[in-house]
Every structure is written in structure tokens, then in C-alpha cells.
Length: 591
Ligand code: NAI
Image 1 (cartoon, rainbow, N blue to C red):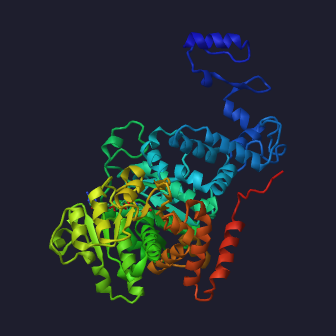
Image 2 (image 1 turned 180 degrees about the horizontal axis):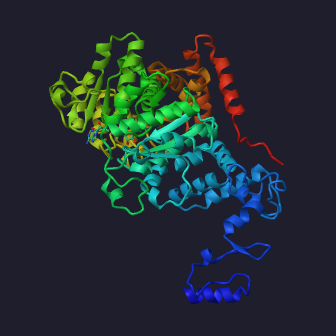
Image 3 (image 1 turned 180 degrees about the vertical axis):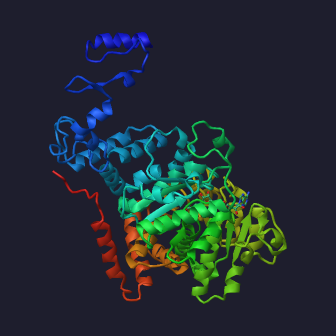
């Protein structure tokens, strides 16, 4: 190796000599020589004389061959001479993405673009949302979290660990942006359906932030945060490349104290209206923290896994009911079996009950229309001693049942909603049972990533003889069911909910994000599903419409919150104006 380096040094003549004698690595031995001939470290020699070097590494300035103000920034000669406009840079980014040979490679390519050239990255995200989101968000972001330790990158977010207790203020104030409006916080304990990923959860906070950006929230308003409180994932604890604290999860009051400190500092620095978005906490903390901070003064918060998923699920049920033929097309006639009784489905069960009550159904009766099924079977009263506070209100007066197909035979639900992360749980027998009692069984397999889905779209259609109204938690490819029938099922993802909820909260200055706001969002999203979508079996708008749908949903939510202006059309204009005014990365030509 040294000989090879020496040879290459010889070939370079006197330009770069390798310090073979002292066996110093090539890069460390490189010195810039100043005018007086004194050798100085390369970086300190570079800084005062070469501002262009710093500009090249500033993702807010560097914009490829479309970078502006080259002369004043000292960039002349550091970039190819042919200046181009934004469109060309965008085309270059698309071409680079097109060359990636795997979804994970695409993720890395996009994160690298975000690191080097934010303008092009966000333009691409906004212009090609449906193509880009599956890489930076679900499903690929799941793989990214699993492989986070192998990613050589500059992370885009704030890391707050147990070791920082008492000095979180300093960390928060190191964040380069001052106008943060949404902090997406995870502790990494339940990443998608992949379990405890510890500090690797940053991938999900960053991914959610990108969904906000795709819907028009300015990137500078977004702060992804990883709370590093250890992990119980032995694989990570044994992995030398793991980026987080090598200790078991903190379960004492030190955990709460760190989160409290973080929230206080966020509020102090960015203002009391900053939204705290809780993401992918395990149920043990998720419900508790939501309750704790919901009623805390000066904290605006929601839990996306509980409330966002609830709204998207209820929206799907509302839209499905509209698609039902015959007399059953009324929400109050539905009986829902929720498979998996965690954050997602309990939130959905609660919001479904609220929707029924709003339609005049007595609350006790509404709860009787909801059945939960967890890892130990149907949630029934005889299990009361082992049930969590969140499940208890839904415990039914019925015998125990641990078999899903048998439970369906007994309950005869009109809808089956899976959020269990149990792959393949909706077997042929289960789908057939649903089809026996319903002309159009509503079947949602919400778990993600794809490897965790309860069933595929293809299986749901095949086993129900093409009668299921189906939605999945990860986008499904169209299913050619017969020569005359192709289904393009909907993508039930809370990406349709949390961005508009946040935009409405920001614009109205709401001090709390209430269940009513989530129900309004659900209703507005369901209203945006038109007959063309129903015809192909979709009960959600396509991902291509995630941003335009956010405008309609945000306007509906804002008009329901603000007593002084309930005019939805006016709010729609205000939402559009907010998005455009804040669009730092508009695609107008810059030449
Ligand atoms: P969670 O961990 O809070 O709940 C999982 C539930 O599944 C628990 O109640 C558990 O008892 C139950 N379960 C586990 N094994 C079971 C079995 N063999 N039979 C029946 N139930 C079983 O997780 P959470 O947040 O509710 O998420 C569940 C899944 O839903 C995950 O894959 C998550 O990624 C997905 N999800 C999808 C969303 C979307 O927008 N499509 C949004 C939120 C979550």
C-alpha cells in the first residue's frame, strides 16, 4: 500500500509528495503552503481565502450548476462554467434517481441531495411527490432505519440523549433555523411495525418532516428530533456501528424529565405555538404522553400514530360506506372489528365512536359496534384484569375468542381493520368469512412496511371474489383482477392527515389539537374521494394528490376551529397563500 502511494507520489512529481518515511496517511500529510512558505493545516489555510469552499458545502446556497451569485460567493472556477436553470438541475436529480438500482439506493441518493442541494431536493419532493415519498417515507424509510448505522451522512435533525439532561437548552439553540413550527419527536421504540430501533428512529422523524414539506410546510419550519433513551434491541446493542447510547431503555423518571426539558426548551426558543408531533413511541408511553401534554398549558401536541391514524382510518370507513351499494351505506350501520389493539386501532376505535355519536348514536351503543382483537384474542370483559386503560372501555360482554376467523363468524363485522404488524394475519379463511356476511366486505390491512401487512391487495380481491373494499398502509400496485377489472386500491396513510392538521393549527393559532379537528379532517378527506376513485376500488385520493388534498382538509379543519371565519373557501385561499408564501423552493427559473 505504502509502496503504491509512493509510486503515485513519484508520478505526481513535486505536486503532492507522500510522507512515506513517517508512514503518515496521505490526506493527513497534505499541507497547503502559504505565501511565506509555512506549512499550515489545509482547512485553516483555506478558510479566509476561499469563501467559495464554504458556499459549496452550504446546502442552502449550493444548487449545482444553477448556483447563483458565483462571483460574489467566490465560486467562479469551482463549478462547471455552463450555468443552467432550476429545471435542468431538477432533470439531473431525476436522472440520478432513475439510475438507482434499489429502493435503498434511491433513499441514499435523495438524502445525499438534501445534504448538498436543498433547493433541488425540495423541488423534486414537491414536483414528484408520489415517486419520491415511497423512498424517503414508508416503505423504504423502514429499511433505512434498520440500516441507519451504515449510512454515512450528515443527519438532518436534533439528537437529544440521556447524557444531555440539564443542558438541552444549549442543544436546541444549536439548531440553525429560528422559525421552527413543528418538532417531530420519536424515541424510536416502535418504528413502523419494526419494533425498537433506538436512535435509528431518526429516519422516521426525518421522513415525516419530508411529508410535511411535500405538502407545503417550509423546510425551515420542520425540526426532526431523536430522543436517545437507549434501546432494548439486542442486535443494535451488539452492533459496533449503532449510533445511539449503548444501554437498555431508560424506564425511570429520568425519561420523563428529559422529555419535559426538551419540550420546555422547544417552547422557550421557538414559541409556545410550536407543534409537538409525537411519532412512533411504544404504546406504554404513547397514550400516557398524549394525555399528559394534551392538557398541559402552552403545549400544542398530537400523537400521529394514535390520532393521525385514527383520522385516516375513519376517513376510509366513511368513504367505503359511500361506496357501498344497497341499504347498508350508512356509517351507523357498521360494525367494525379492529385487529390489533394498539395505538393505531384504539385511536381509530375512539374516533369511530365519536363519528357515530355525532350522527346521533348513543355512546354505549356506539361502543357495542366496536370490537378489538389483540395478541390474546377478543378484548372481552372477562379479561379486564389484564387489559390496559386504553382497551378497557371497549371490552365487550362476550366469551373469550382467540381465533380471528371464528371471531368474525360470531361478530359478523362489516369492516375488518388490521393494524397489528402481524404479516399474513388475514388469511383466505378470514377474508372468506368476511365475504360470507357482506356483499362488499371492508378490509383494511394498515400495517407497514409491506413485510408487515395483514394481507396483500391481490389476496383480498382474489379471496373475496373481487368484492372487498380494500385499502393498505403501504401503496399497492394496481391489481388486474380480470380482463375487464383492474383495481387501484387506496393508500391508507396518515400522510393525508398530519400535514393539513398542522397547517390548520399554524394558521388558526389553535392552542390544542382536538379530537374534533381530527374528525373534521377525516370527513373532509373522505369527501375528496370521487366516483372515479370508487370505480377502481379506491377510498383514498392517490398519493399524487397528497398536497392538494392537504389544502382542502386544512381549510375544512381551520374553518371548523376559527369561530370568526367558518368560510371554507376563504380558508382554502389562506392555506394556498401560506404554502406559496412559504415556498422557499419554488420552481421559477432563477437565471
Ligand atoms: P402497537 O404496537 O401500538 O399495536 C400493535 C397491536 O397489535 C397490539 O395491540 C398487539 O397486541 C397487537 N398484536 C400483536 N400480535 C398480535 C396477534 N398475533 N394477533 C392480534 N393482535 C396482535 O402498534 P400500532 O402503532 O398500533 O401500529 C400497528 C401497525 O400499524 C404497525 O405496522 C404500524 O406501522 C401500522 N400503522 C400504519 C399506519 C398507516 O398510516 N397506515 C399508521 C400507524 C400505524
